[in-house]
Image (cartoon, rainbow, N blue to C red; front, side, top):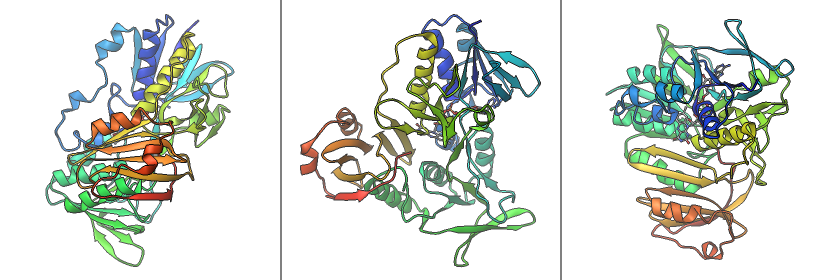
Length: 410
Ligand SMILES: Cc1cc2nc3c(=O)[nH]c(=O)nc-3n(C[C@H](O)[C@H](O)[C@H](O)COP(=O)(O)OP(=O)(O)OC[C@H]3O[C@@H](n4cnc5c(N)ncnc54)[C@H](O)[C@@H]3O)c2cc1C
């Protein structure tokens, strides 16, 4: 019996199934997904799909026929409730038990909620799934007062999309700047300015302490200090928690994610973990990372598929992430280890197109580029190399060099 059972029909699960077939794996491949939808592109939910610029038919990653042709069994609208590494079985909510030779955990993450008074009021949303996006899209529109909690990528993308729809937008962020966990101060400053120019009321260093309602529906967000910000709709965008429940119950080692080695193997024999649910040590010396990005999900999928099919381990590329806000196209490659002091050098114009090259001890660690694809491509090829020229600076109009302590990227 060579059956592979994949738990989760998202980006990572779908790509793992297809990668197995590309590697000519001949055993059965079954993908079980709790959502009653073909695997789809989540990044579009906060961007083109939210503003109505993309029809729902364009969201799926592949057609149903593509999985059929690859002889992949998609079991959608079904939830796995238990995993037994000893018996090599997974149990579905219906009670059905499936046996596996290898199991891939690709269960993703779930939107984090905020435990504050009034958080059960109508009109408070999170955005993770297609269903969430449908609901939010129906609630937004011209003149609607939206308050977003959290100025990470998701919060800022929702803010930009809502402005395009004509909503009045306030973003509340507890820390002193946007993208505090995931981008340089320079890039954060450029994006914050742009949001402000687009009319977003950016409240940095502000803490929400509760939601105020009327007739069961949210009408304002209360801030520490007593101010109330009127709201018809609230979006909580304060991060996501990895789905580790099945793994923990099965005795598999977890931290903030399911621990997985360079082949995506977990601590249980023949069980792999990939994508947003995994804390993946890619084996390149950076240690275990859990980066919520399409590229990490794809790379994890290929690593697990190769290990199961007995193929060579694929090379791991630099982590890559992108975000679109208004007409700004942000691309990020590389990762800054937690607590690393970086020197950030600006190349270009913060009000237009630019790249920020982030180095430590003369070695380029990461690049962030906004509307500068060529600078991005050139710089990302040099990540990991010693680059004395960056220390001397290739600075543009908004000349800025900083040495600062930063936290880890996403
Ligand atoms: C709104 C939004 C915008 C984003 N934008 C970007 C972007 O611009 N760029 C980028 O790189 N990344 C972006 N991301 C992140 C990216 O989408 C994720 O990193 C990626 O989808 C992770 O894939 P995954 O397969 O690990 O998880 P998911 O895509 O979340 O898939 C996991 C699936 O598993 C299912 N599942 C969970 N538990 C079970 C169970 N017990 N049984 C059966 N099924 C189960 C879930 O229902 C889900 O469908 C964005 C994410 C969101 C939500």
